[in-house]
Length: 174
Image 1 (tube, rainbow, N blue to C red):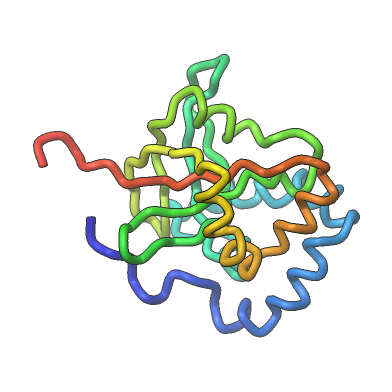
Image 2: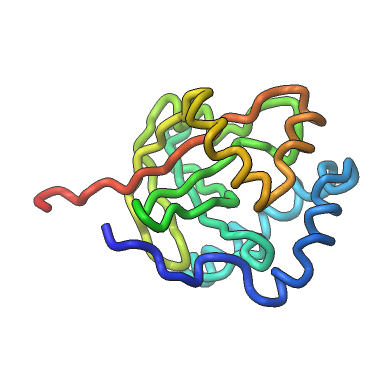
């Protein structure tokens, strides 16, 4: 798998506003409003643009993760902030659920069926979701928190967020 491009992060506009956006994202008000609005808007934009546009991408690298529903067996697209690992082509994702009490459904879906598809900037990538061990999570937690206020989410939720590495799969015959 070819490494990701150097330009995998937020726009210059997003970088300039990032401290303000992160403070806002750590608030209880954001936790009440954002889960209702942002995922729907990002799914709509992803459908209209083939995955090339996401609101969250203005602040943090983001992707559209399509998992298989645990109960329904149906595809479940979900916008998720990510930390691309340029060396491997993998993505780190955190099941923060905006700091709410329950784990997001996509994390349970990955635990049941680890095979998923990522749309990253319009590029479809088959991946396998690997839940990080406590040691692996500790190794990357600082980098993830530098990108987004996950510590505040974990504190508000009263639970440890699940962290996954989405590892690209090779297409059959390669």
